[in-house]
Length: 95
Image 1 (cartoon, rainbow, N blue to C red):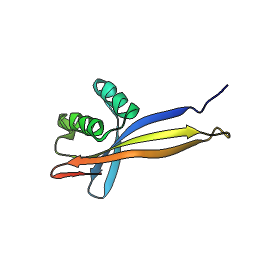
Image 2 (cartoon, rainbow, N blue to C red):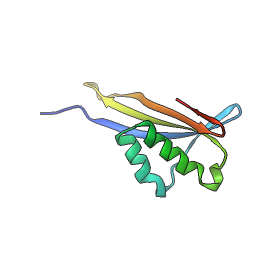
Image 3 (cartoon, rainbow, N blue to C red):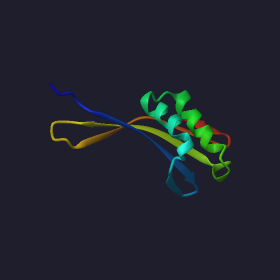
């Protein structure tokens, strides 16, 4: 008996003028990221973004937090799917 294996991940993107870059999550926020990946509610994505935004290197930045799921079918090729996305930043909060 086998079932499909789902892999979930959270990706955080720093949005700058004309450029985006993916951020590495600090070890101190791994639990927060795991919670957001397991159950990607708007509240959990916002909590992760706000925790990152409190770090000096990201203060005042626009961030996008994305929860992704990869399902593996019969060919074992992963099929990534965006589950939820949230943007936060100075004066901006939108899905």
